[in-house]
Length: 358
Image (tube, rainbow, N blue to C red; front, side):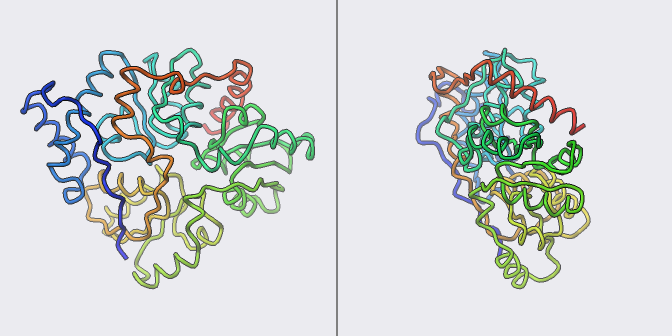
């Protein structure tokens, strides 16, 4: 079964095309189509439709000295049209911290924009889609962490970065899908509390068996929870054993047992590109749709992508019009504000992540 990607997000409204010449619009449309690398899904007519929006956004970014970062799960028109940096959570948190610009526009979900504010409290951080949450970050509160700390006094608490600033403030260190095993191995003692992802926690329990007891909170990513080992085995039977299964660690243990490779979004992309270069073109991506979109755009090899593409409704909430509006005149709810005490405590959490991850 070949991979079916979601419908392309054409804008509901447009910048006045009269703001740009026909030559500028055509050149931008050609650039977009060449960058996205999906000629059938993104025909030149679609790229011409969004070209005035990307041109205007890029013009305003330069005028207002805004650094626009986007997570890999955002749509290709955002990733290849207007983003200055695209990556997974860990890399983007560093990019927000190190960017010279004093205004960050974060095209993602809310907890990621909060993370940018924590690492750069002196900067203005704009999040175009305040309603874009996350089943993991929405599934745990600061009080839940305090209760666990009371139940297990003195035990280090590691939280997945998919958590709110208030939750980070209660935890000792954050981790991401690219560094969670390395960091948790390095925490002191023979026990640790891991929140909120029960699937990643189960993977930790297995990896650290005999060395550390891992106490796990019962949360999950609604996207990755959709996949099961049974589904993967069924797909592999349909496709054949020559397919390489690449899975994100937010998936359940039964999925990870079927996978040939487990890693963060960036690692999955790199592995898919590597397999293509080795003439191993049959790849099944067990993660959110945006990863497949980036693989298609960023490899010169012929790849056959298989599997069921599951879209994150939160990550796909942001569109180009939202970014343009937030750039022009951000509303109060689009500007990230966090209590200074929470920022200070959450900063210690993230500084520890950077220290232990290096």
